[in-house]
Length: 564
Image (tube, rainbow, N blue to C red; front, side, top):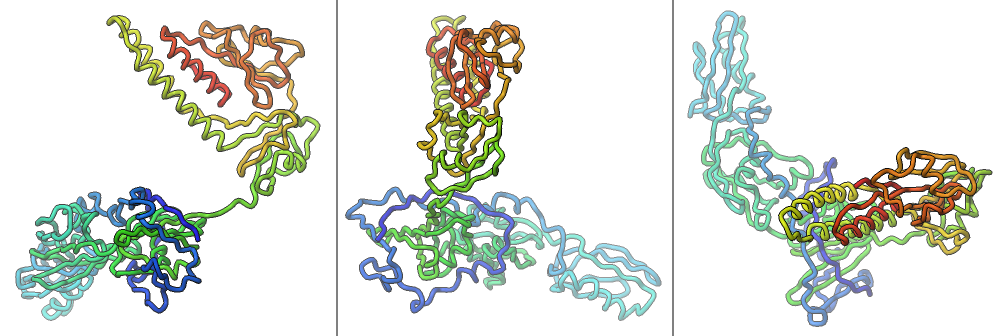
């Protein structure tokens, strides 16, 4: 029996580009029959324990109040009401729009009889056409307007008269929006506006109290339309409605909720309109990521807190209840790893190895060529990149703190320190943007002790007769290596030091990535890289030490010199 506590962390990531064939109510609105779904509400006597052996129970008497458990605070559907619908008006008409009193119709007749004008639908639902008489169009769909008017005109003018009829503007209306919305009120719009526009003008459904699956439009106390906003979010279904003055949009109180996080595309709180539903139905809406393998459920029942854990294969047997927190995890263990191989070799560019393989096992499969320098093999690792970035940011934070905490004795000194602080701030901003290479220094021959990780990159250096000299030198350049020459000899060949150079801070990077702080008299080996660090000019000792340490750290991690 597994026992654990899962901390639910608030997330709000909505996957785009997918439209479900079934509506939310079809996915979640069917209560699971008791005969098919084992009950898990009784911690002392769970039904079918043989089928649900992963179940575990935590008691608050033993562990105290589970205050670490948090429910995701973002409600699925909350993203609808951010002003996008409130600022739009339904001035364009679709064929299903129902014509109402107050709408304006543009009518043109030509041929044997000519007429052009805008006609308003009167309170009786008619427009009056000269020489023809009243034509009732209230309640007619926009798609049938042309046909309705033409049929009436043909009763008078059977031929030789052309007819064109089209809606011009919708009737201005005011609609009550009430219930569990952010700002109930009486909102203006036009009859063609969608219910989403009126809800958005009212600030949207109250995300802590209102229902997204139970919204009604009422007229004279009678329900005209019931709206489930999840059907619109998930499948784009929203029935058109022609509003009239005095219509009421009512948002009901929230019904039942559960939250989902982890290996899903839709990590939200969700509302459902039945007392219980299976996890399988819930996951159809939350949308599993490919790597998901298990589910855990956190629920409170009175004073007892329960934590339950199941493989996804059992999702159809597990029931969610109001207030449950569902976490989807990926409990996978590495079986094999893949290592990329680049540089001077004649073999494959990728090698698949068992989990826990060492560098020696890779080298046994590599086919070196005549220029391969296996003794200087280079290893680059993503986890090292992340760690180097973290360590650099810590050093930069300390430098920033030391810089801005310096006190000045005089006004003039304060001005000078402010200028220094500004320059150091610019340096820190540049330093945070540098990208470490993530190289692991491998001692020659210590191949059997280096355990590889998935995604590691091995580079086999090529024998070279060129060395690099750069940093604070006059002409940074690549030079031909000659045996016995010292670092100072190569620096002389590139014009010598600049005025801002720190002659006592020479960094020598060997071909295997090993970095050394050396003297100018140090002999340079084939394939080495020589870097001259800049001089730190500041009167504050703590700041100077911090700058020097950061410069050295960047030089090793990125193999570049950052200017002050």
